[in-house]
Image 1 (cartoon, rainbow, N blue to C red):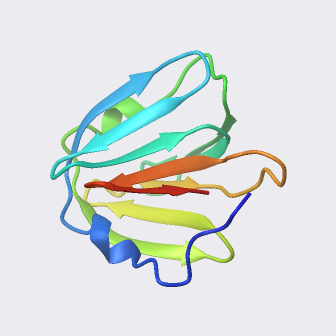
Image 2 (image 1 turned 90 degrees about the horizontal axis):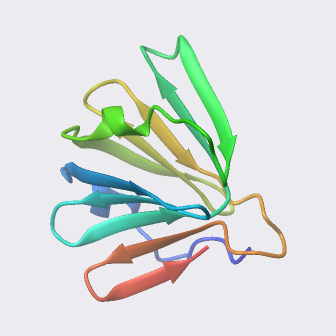
Length: 118
């Protein structure tokens, strides 16, 4: 909806380890160490097994492979403009937080005290 701020640096995720994934009826929360998290409220793309498996999903979901991210470390972060966040993990998994809801929030980032609504 809002895109990412022009000054946002996705490198803030590099080195962060996924500690927990939480599922509710309307959100998925991916919690990293150091007080960093992503709350998915819209669509996302999760690629795994070296890209052989790929799941494009929209909240609410019935099943997911996101639990496999627990313990994985982010090795790269990038942005597909205007607001898709792409996180690549040491496991080979890739999580794309899509900014595809023009009238609603797609996801929220929390980095310490800072909150970014996309």
